[in-house]
Image 1 (tube, rainbow, N blue to C red):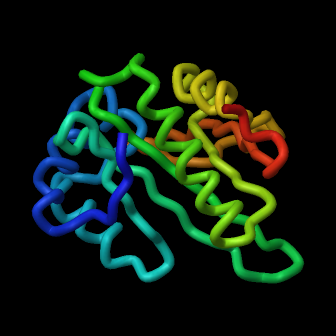
Image 2 (image 1 turned 90 degrees about the vertical axis):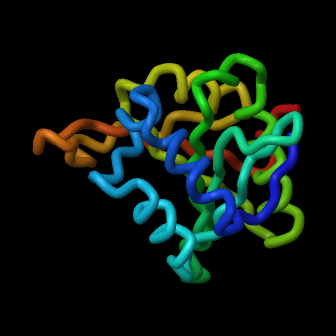
Length: 162
């Protein structure tokens, strides 16, 4: 597994992964997923990496920083092609990015906020060392207009599992 900056050539592949029902359920993006991926790449506050395995892009992982010195931390999100789930690639990508954020950017704390119903993601994050902080009630609006809860999880530098 390798992380590298996303290029324009990766956009169609990432949009196709986001279009799979298993990913779209959590990531959404409207009718124009190519546009949604491009918008993420254009966001100056977001850094997006492609996740490569065996020479092909199988997902993306992204992060942002809270820069207020009194609340400084980084947040991240990840999605994987359902065809490669269960191979440990998500955990490897999260560990790799976490080490980079701790060692190279000096962060001491990372956060992630999966939907509370996304039990597979929550288990994967826990394997890396993320711990539940609390439920954020009616945190995110679904495409059908309803609100759902999310689980705020955090990872301190010393909690990163190998």
